[in-house]
Image (cartoon, rainbow, N blue to C red; front, side, top):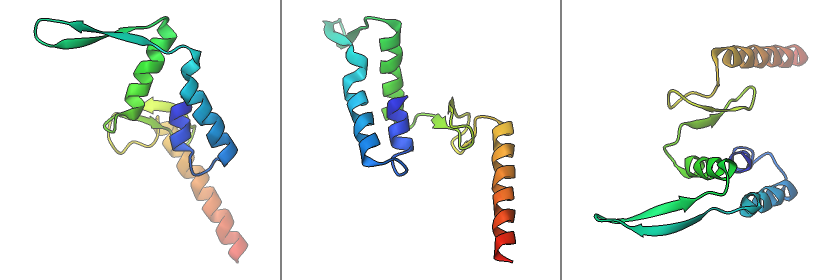
Amino acid sequence: MTSFLYYMDYDTIDEQTRSLYRQGISAFGGIAPTYRIALEKDSPVIVWDFHSLLVMVQMCFSFMLTDKDSDMRMCKHCQKAFVASRKGNEFCSQKCKNQFNVYKSREKKKGNKRDD
């Protein structure tokens, strides 16, 4: 999740926080998975050796995060990670989309009252 937040919040966080995120990403939880090359009949295959389920999930998450075609998003309202069912989805649910629009509308109305 740290990697995801680093890129999603890059413009809003200060350099000290960015540095902390980079250190966390590079440490990879202290346990890096290992791999070996298995020579199969048709072609070589990478065989991963994960020390725990958590490390495997982190590795899969890292692959998803670096994949440009991944459907992983962060909700604009609640900031929770979700898998988008369509390319343009910005919200994890219709409820979050509605709440976001209500708050946005209220802020707009407050701005207009101040201008009067």
